[in-house]
Length: 279
Length: 315
Image (tube, rainbow over all chains, first blue to last red; front, top):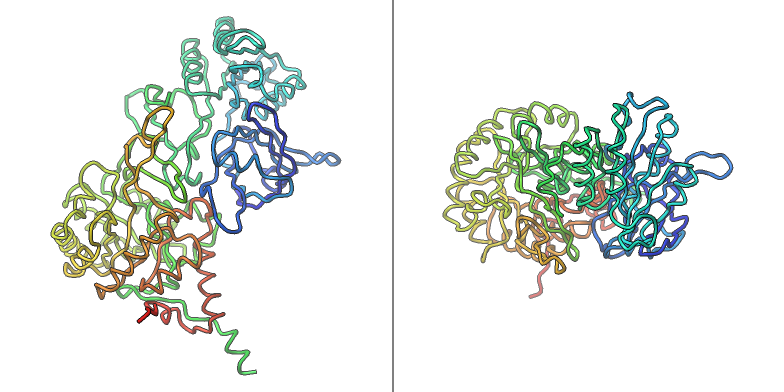
C-alpha cells in the first residue's frame, strides 16, 4: 500500500452521474488485486474540503498502449455528494491524493481452478465497479463468469460493453424495463442458482444493501459460497479509526465489529449480520 | 562565515513533560493513530515526539453499532464507542513492535467506572515501553462512565487523584472535555489532584441528520466533532488552561499543519497532538515536526521552548 500524488489522465462522463476516472499510477497499478480499493481526494493548496478521502474499488488497470505494462487505475465514480463531485469535476492533469491499493479482495478458491467451475457475478448499478477485474482474473484461471447486472434504468447499466468484450454470458435487468428483463437482478440469479449444484460454483456480489442481502439469502439457500464487496463511510482506510465497521455474527451467536477497510471490503457473506445492515 | 554557521545550526526541538523527554513537541492524538503500527509504512514513526495510542480498557470493548463516522464542514463526527483490543492484548501483541521505534508511547485509558480506570492503570504501570498514561474522562460516545467524570470539577478531582495513586511509575496526563462551561475549573481540579499534565481538548458533542431519510447520520445519534472546524475553540481553551495551571498543557484540536501547531505552542502548550488530519494525510505529523524545525531555523530560534507561551498580547 502506497500514498502517492497521481495525475488525472482522463475523466469520462458515462451518463446518469457516473464517471470513469483514469489516473496515472504505475507503482500502485502493479500491486492491485481484484476487489481492492484506493482512497482519493483532490490535492489542495489552501483549504481542504472535503477533509477525508473517499474510497473507490478499482474497476480496471490502465495499461500502457505500447508495452502493456500497468500504468494507472480506472475508477468508476458515482457523483453522490460533495466529495465525489469534487473528484468528477476535476480536470485532466490535476493531481489527486491516492492511498492504496488497500483491503481484502475477492478470493478465488483452488477448488475453482478448472474448466467446469462457474462464478455468478451480481451487480447493482455502480456495484459493477469491483467485478470487472474479478471477471478477468476468473477467465485467466479458466473459471466461467456469468454476469447478472441490474439497475433502475438502462442508463445505470454503465460499462457493460467491457464485459461483453470479454465474451462472457450476461443477464441484464432494469426496474423500468428499459433494458433486459424487467425487475430485480435477483430474479434471473434465483433461476440460475436452482440449475447448479456443484461444489465449484461461487457467487460474487456488489450493489445496494438490499440487493446484497437478497443475494446472500439466495446463495445460502442454494448452499453456494458468496462473497460481497461492501461500502462504508471511512475515516482512514488504515484500520485505525474504526469508523467503517460492520456487525458480524458467527454461528455461535458471538458478535463483533469488522472493519470494512481491512477485514473487507470483500467479505464472506456469512460473516455479516444482515439484520443490522443499513437498508 | 560565522553568520552562515548560525543559520545552519539545528534548533533544539526537545521538550520535557513531567520528566519525560520528547524529541519534539509533535504527538499523535488517541483514537486517530490506531496503535501506531498502522502508519509505519506511510511515515517515519521515529520522526515524531510520541504516539498516544487508541484508548484501552482492561477488557476488550466492542464499540457502537455503525454508522460511526460522518464528515461535516471542515470536520468529522465520530461515535466509535471505545472499541479496543484490551490492555493485555495491546501489551502482548502491539507494544513489542512499537518499542522498536524511537518515539514515546503514551497509553490513553478508558473505563466505565472508577475501578475500571484503576485496574487498567495498575496493569499498565509495570509494562516497560510506556512513557505516560492519558486518562480519558472526556469521550462523549459512551452511554455511561467516562464523560461522567468530566461533568463537574469535584468528580474530575476524585478520579484524577485516585488514578494518580494507582499510577505509581508513570506520569498521569488527563484529557479534558471541551463540553463544559469553564475549562479552567477542570484544569485546576486536575492540577490540584496531582495530574502531571493535561491534554486539552477532546471532541465537541455534535450531530448531523440525513434529511431524505430523516435519520441521524450516526447510529449513536450524537458524536464527537473533530478536525479544523474546532481549532479556534480548542486554541482558546488551551490558552485559558495555560493561564490557569502550572503543569504542562498539551494542545489538541484540529491541528492539521505547522501553522496550527505553532499557534498552540505560542498560546502556551508544551506539546501538541495531531488528530483527525492523520486520517486524510497519514504522514502529516512527520511533516509538522519538520515544519516546526524549519520555522525555528527561518526565525533564528535556537530552541523550540522559546516559542512556548510567547504570545504577545496587546496592552
